[in-house]
Image 1 (tube, rainbow, N blue to C red):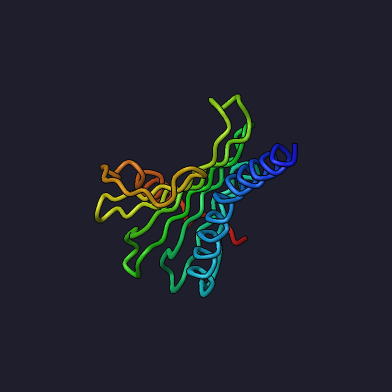
Image 2: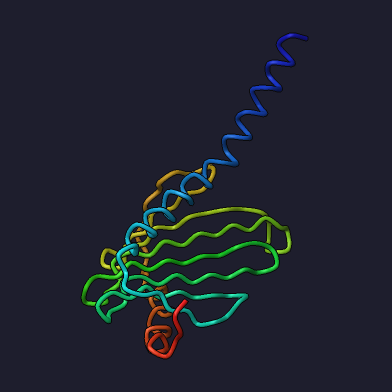
Length: 155
């Protein structure tokens, strides 16, 4: 009986740790982006209250772009890090789907290096697994918004 209780407690803590592991990485990468864009001159938005997109501008050039989507079953955020030449050098995608309507509950973080076509994946079961894949599709959102940003209003 004593072992059964301690085993259940151990299982509880393992489950709890796996739930919060991905949220730890999410806050780590969110903080990294916030620090990266903290010296921006201005922040502009597309004005969409349900799916806001924020562009962080410094010296008239885009420094960072954050795309927020909130489907009924979760949250999806994509953050772009840009060089001084407005070239994307890093993309962080956070998916947090907590409802079965999206094909199952899961949360994942993808850190993409477009120059190397490299993706590093973080989930509650897999930490930092690297793989190579053509990442050009991830740049399409940025290319689309880049043309619109100059017409957006300040946040």
